[in-house]
Image (cartoon, rainbow, N blue to C red; front, side):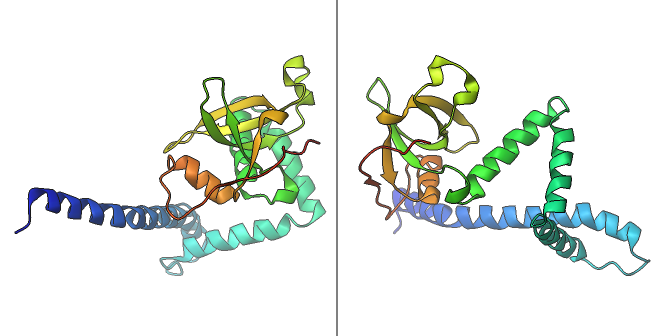
Length: 208
């Protein structure tokens, strides 16, 4: 006979096993459906009658992303994109949303050679240690003594979008020998990870 406790445990085990898969599949189909609906609507207008087939919107979206990425390899299109960005950065509110989104995605996606992506640990005055990510080493643009000898470290929240950007003394940071993706997963899931080992590095982060 199954007891209520064993039934609850079995149910929770199945729930934990299915939830990540369900969320991933749902997000995937949501993105595909959005792309199909948005791009497909324009294709129905452009294409002759009865030419459009389901899925062409998704295929066109993927092709568009690839073509844009290919175009950005050429200086001419980089210059056009830079001018377009310049216009966006002149529009109030829009520039804040666009700039914040672009910088955060660049921080996550660009390679180490294109930007600081070091994982560090920092201990606050109350003896609480947090894992963060060095986002900017040169803070001279702030023009304040408060930024001298410090770097910008981002401490994200767990299970939600947001966090704090803190200026901390570089010599007080502890470098962690930890991949960016693993560290982000550790922080964003409140430390609920399995079979992952965190090794503390020796020395201090390099400065520019």
